[in-house]
Length: 224
Image 1: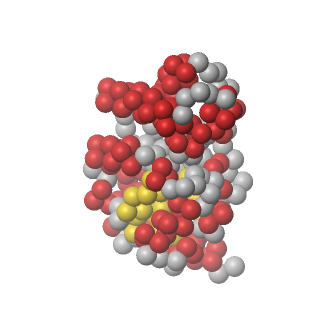
Image 2: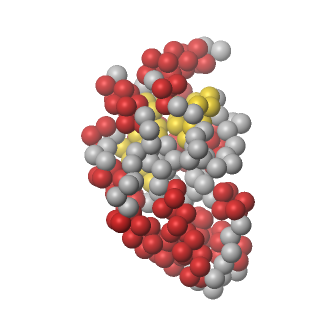
């Protein structure tokens, strides 16, 4: 029986990727590195600190990962505060309300910093729907490590087989799979070159996982 839903944030609730992309590229320029598209896409779903650790190792930078994080967040904050066009992804608010109104417990499991999470949740008044918010930046390991989703299920107070994860990234899907949680891969034009082969279900429209539809599907999946 479905009791809880764990949402990723970037690429699922909000299309903040263009802001992150601009912030990262400004940071790359400031420290003098050229990051290939393939390397950048491999970062999707990981926390900023883990991305910056990879950059320091890959480019043998003299700056610390923490210094890179501070630079990236400075640029992101500037873009976030000046971007009045930032909106929720189409259909996600209706889905959140559908789940909430049907008694499901909602938890956020995002690699974003808690400061970034709170910015989004306050801007779009989402706190009323969610029981808990978890930031991968506060954990030792980043996605594809399953830690964040294991802790999210615990925060929801349910067994892992009683919840689902909605993810848009390769690393997030791998993390949900490793946690043993049913994973919905959200494949939209916001997602670039991500691998959903380990997802239990792949969608490109949130109406495909309305409460009624996903509840019935999860019951069927758990009975096999």
